[in-house]
Image 1 (cartoon, rainbow, N blue to C red):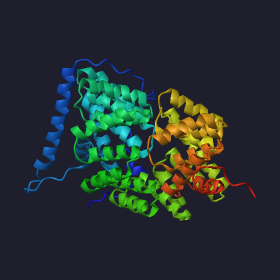
Image 2 (cartoon, rainbow, N blue to C red):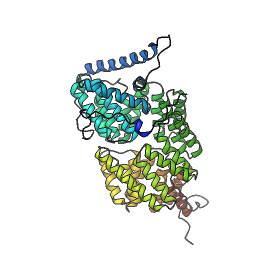
Image 3 (cartoon, rainbow, N blue to C red):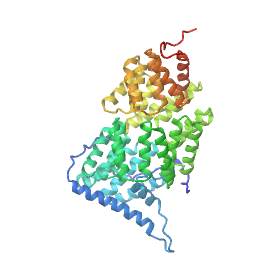
Image 4 (cartoon, one colour):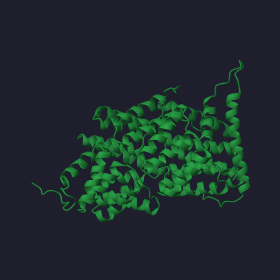
Length: 500
């Protein structure tokens, strides 16, 4: 399999717009433009048909054009990126960079080309997501708004609406993403490109029924690796581990392009990690990096696996490299907790300070990182502040399993265990196999003297993934040991043994 060449961080950056380029305004948030009412269904249907036809023509052109000696011409990076988008698959960072440069150059001389502006804006969103450079979200928003000014969405520019939905998801504004996506779906339910953004929006809002329906519709409209990947994620979120693994393996076997293959291998690594198999997880993350050296999320996955294997020096180096290549706040939190587990409190404080800096910078670019900040505050800062952040998320209908778990734990840490139990139980009831969720629920139940369920959930945590956290996993085992073995003959007396 061909592997994309390694590039340094500077060479992977998309070209900077020229000084007179208009596509670099300050972020205004994904909700700056309210979605219009669903009208003119026929024009959007024609535009969607044209977009699909263009993708088919492009794919045919990639095969049909030869280089003069009778052999098909090898597609260039721009063509590969366009073909990946047409297929609903990720493009490599180098190809994505080439596509951005190509569209930037084109719209400088064709500022009213709505399709090219929509493509540029959507490519900016993907670049920002894959590089964690949130400054590109402002450029994405401006390019997409200019696309809609040149050709409104209700007059056939549905792809700009889809781009705004993707932008809202990337900024964790799932309500806005839902509105944009459903505007397109109502007008043209067979536009397959809208369903991935709707899946992400519904998942962020905790609407499992809608997410399932959108995943099924996407699989109906778009066969192949993209549909398999989304289906595997659905199974994983429902706790159907065997189904998720089988579907993820099929996606990895059928993937052909390096970026698509790396994404599939990374998914297998995440599933192995959640099963408590760090050796298998690291093998999959390593395979993803060999396939596409730009798949930097696998660097962080590899760091988690190394920490679970007690290869802490290598884990620290892997986390540091992951933060260099993909500076996400979650990785800074994980690195800080690894430092703390080793007694390196000064290094932990440095990592936590970096987390705060990244969250603040992301906020300026319209990205809401309240969830990871609240997780940090609950365990290492101010639990009351964590509760405030997460209550705001819940009021904003961000009711995923992750938010429910974090809110339940923050309430417990703030001395409100009875209220926290409700949210922690909601997270567990989704069925997702997450050792951290089981640990949080078990600790809260133990605090409320509900010892039988507490023992069961703590056992589930250490059985699901014995090394799920360098700080929390040892605490889970200590809490379980303190509860002791259940009495013989059934749960007649579930009290823990008396202290010595």
